[in-house]
Structure formats: structure tokens, C-alpha cells
Image 1 (cartoon, one colour):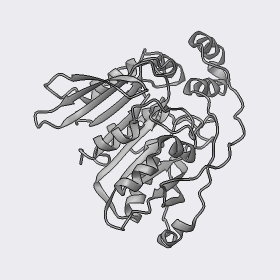
Image 2 (cartoon, rainbow, N blue to C red):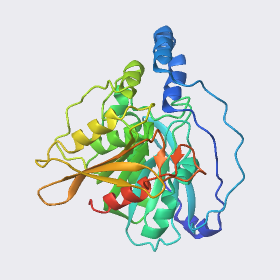
Image 3 (cartoon, rainbow, N blue to C red):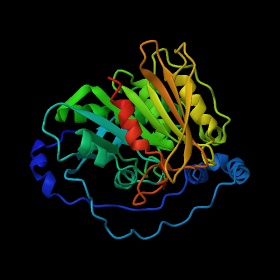
Length: 348
């Protein structure tokens, strides 16, 4: 994959198409995937009924286009191919980008979402304009997963330089080759299935990603097939051996999340903070006219926070502080995107 640098001159004049679809929950996505696995069909359907997942519903027609507001940059379309397959992506280059080495944030969408939908909901491109970073949105294909979920529960997709991790890492490196990127400021974040894959990327490639942001996601290697994925989402996950290298991580999870059990967020932070001698310090807070939350910080001996956990009270399975133009958002806060960027900027 090689991006054409001449496209940069056309960015500010390019139109950005917005795709709005109402995705099914990751649980419904796993349900759909299970229906494609005939050997497990009867067992899977019984598990799905026990889990109480909602049925699939057809997506509504896309709403009218909305103005981009503070956005002055634009998307560049691209793709990356290796032995594990091909994935498309969209790269947001902010209008504030000067050509100097800038941070790069890799954003992994949830099931049935698209890069445009995820960008609209998280508003990460607005922050990119403020900070001057680039944002890479890999797109899962329906050929790889019928509901466009990242395959975080497959054993092959939990190994370095294999499966989907190799594609996402290769895509990240290719963008770094084609643009002026500060190699010490490359980060990865995601929602739900994308959050689970972000954990995998940060665990397998600590040399590439300086920090990880996980929203409503799952721990590394918490499942190894579709059946164990269902169990993990209910809170009965496999506990993998923690990485020997520290995993700087910020986690957001709603304590009323009925799609991915909040215990997954607890385990994510435990894995990220296992090397720290100090216990976490809890700080309660509330968003004005919004959600209450408990923010727990895990500092190291250097005083720098290495892990951060936001448990949002009364909240479900949605990106906190997100914009309603995107799917799976909760505007009652806290602002997960801004807090992730704040945390990322402390890590190099």
C-alpha cells in the first residue's frame, strides 16, 4: 500500500461522505456469526437465548448530511494488503497539519459500524484539528465478518504478525512511512469489539503503540472461539497471563452495560496495572446534567499515571460524550475521546 502524497493538495476541497447506519449490538453480531457456523448452530442458539440478546433489525435509511463544523481537513481513502488479507481504511488529515511530525491515533470501530460512523460518533476528528494529530480508521470487511466485527475471539487474531493484527499493524506502519508521524506518539483505541482488538494490538505491539484506549471492550485473549466469546461478554472470560511489558491503558465502561459485562473493564485495568506497586486512587465525579462516574488512577513510582479506569454509573454500551450523529453514543458524558487524548499525550 502506498498513498499518493499529491492527494494532500486536494484534501480541503474533497467531499466527505457520511454513512449512518444503526448497528446491531456486538452480541447480535456474534449471534449472526454463530448462525454461519453450522457445526455450532444448535448450541449457539441456546446460548443466545440465555444471553437475552436482541434480534437483528434492519438499519434505518441514512439521515440527512450534517455540517462538519470545526473540521477543515478531510479523509483520504486507502487500503492495506498482506498475506492475511486486505482491509480498507480512511485516514483523517487535519487542516491544521503543517507537515511536521505529528501523533497518530488508530481508531477501531465496533460491530456493524463504519469509519465515517465511528468518526462522527467519537468526534475524534474535531480533536485532531485541535491537537494536530492524524487519525487512522481501519475498516473491517463483511467478507471477514458478516457483521463487520473485528475477530478478537479467534486464536489466530491474537498472535503477533498473524491475522487481523498483522493487517492493522502493517496499515499503521504504512501510514507512518507515507506521512510525517512521530513514532513515539502512535496510539490505538476502540469500542466494544474494536476495543477488544485495540487491547490485542497494544499487547502484541508495544513497540508500535505507546498507549491503548478501550471503551466497553474486553481483555486480551479473553476468548478463543465463538462460544467462549459469548461467555466472556457475560463476564466469564479467560484470564491470560499479563504481558511482561507494561501496557499504558485508559478504560471506559458503563456499570449498566448489558452487552459487555463491566467485569471486563476491571480485568483490563488489572492487566495494565499489574506491575505497579501502588494501589489505585478512586476519584468520584459527575458531569453537569450528565452521568456520575468513578475515576481510578494507577500511578507508578515516577508519578505518571500508567492505567486509568472510568466506571460510568447508570450508563450502558455506548461511547460516552459522543455525538448523536454516530451510532452507539451517549452524550451525557464524560468525554471519552478528550480524556483518551489527554492520557495519550502523557505517554511516549
